Length: 148
Image (cartoon, rainbow, N blue to C red; front, side):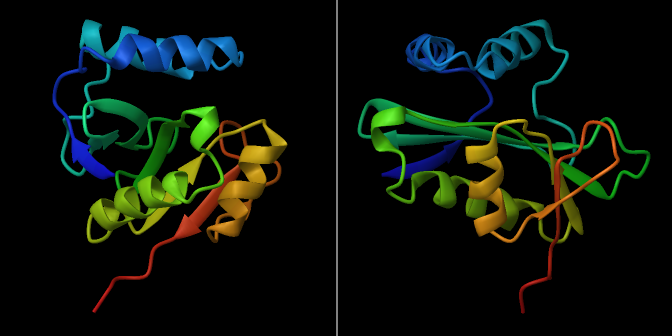
């Protein structure tokens, strides 16, 4: 398995969208629409869109943006994290999040995200994200400690 940053959506992306939509997960459809329209191409300073591959097979995706819902440019936002269902609980999602966090260090001292899914919330909490109450568009937050 390898994690690769991308600047164009790969030809295999529709298959990932199809899988996500079958689960009722529309975020990858939104990602593709916004990427193609130029609304969000993960191309501002500190931003990245990562893909997870096994040879030629696209297994997952995850993005890092400046948080558009937070006034500080020092807050990053994890977005559109998705791993094929048959490959979950094997550490692939963790690997994607850790790769995004590594990219965020030195750029975004804090990362935020939003999920309404309890399973996803538990996943992020296991990675050190704290639940957030009483704020809109933020369900979890994590302060990043710079690596030596």
